[in-house]
Image 1: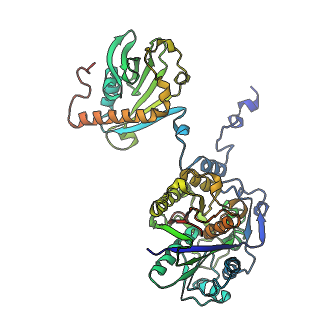
Image 2: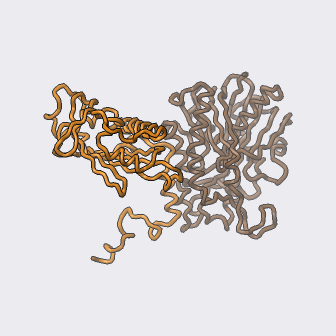
Image 3: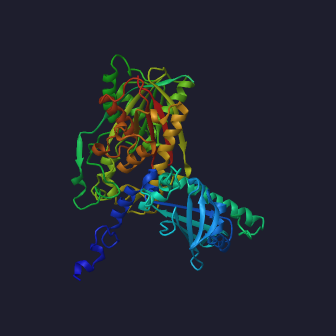
Length: 212
Length: 330
């Protein structure tokens, strides 16, 4: 490897204090700091949101890691049935649309990822990435911070298997991408208020059996 | 409430055009936080603020014609670098203008948005029946007097200010009404802009090095966020007070601290660049003179048809004052 290729400061668009002085950094920061941002610039490629939940992080993680609870806090996933690799919900936003769902949770890092897809279970490409953080660490108070990100997978723009859709369905999940922030905000609020209610009233956080 | 009208504005810009080379080839004046200005004017040595007001008012008198502005009830001034400590320059300007006003008020505060505060003060004195007309005078002369000093030139902020004087004439009628004037004072932000000097002594003590204006580095990000918020907020408040929808605005005129604020305010108000009359590239940061100079520019360019909805707005210093108003030219 040549010397130049070895030098990370020579890589285009790498800005470090060694190759980008503080005055330039300040100017760049000012240029990047707007008073307002177009919705698409913030939520077009990724849809990330975050919320504080007044409920212990272990409980929030345990609740999210139980895939059946999606029938509680999501707007339209209902009627879970067992599937080969997880569960299959009906996503009532799409009428009788099946939503295949697998949960991948890691307790040590308190991450909970839902791998989903409408209509088929072979390629779960709609992935909801969530992370629970002890609020004591980041906000100096009890409770949890929940982060949630979706990435704008190309299939949101083009249904890879249109032939699998129920005959009478007019909507494709990706058509709703411009409403994802709004929809996920509502669901995040559902999550927050359900968990805060149960925690405040000392109710079981995860019900013995979530109604299917 | 009886209407007041802004019936004319005029500008005076010092002859000396200073380009970016003046600030030294290797300084960051034109590329750093303060980029955007191509040129600016500097006052001549010995040129007084009062004489700048006289020059701008001569243009305004010619523009208004007739006997307008021969008698003035109220003279209001704001000068960034006063001709003398202690005394304001309003009385001196009155002498040069040959007028004998009932009241002279030299505003020491509200800097970059002083023109809107003057509109508010003139309105209140007119409503109180104290005066029937007012001459509003905003002078920025700190560029040539402070920032041009050879020890200050290389400072990145020195290329930003430009000198000029803007004046406006206000009368108690409804020919060109100013409505929805709103203003705010934010004491929490009062101490974030200071006179600085390499001598540790206070500004009024004898010194070896020149004074300059400093925005402390640790506050820059907060001041930027504050400026981004304050001006759209106060313009929208003025719109509500004047019962004008923001989407109905024809022209926006603000102070002009730098090109980024101008962009951000337009974006926040969802107004295209064409509706924002500014002159940052040619004149730099005109402090309080910016709003009346840009109003005069808009008039000169035929961008103020009768009844147009013109939003005025701005903030001063590091955010200690903010004000806005809606004006409909006659």
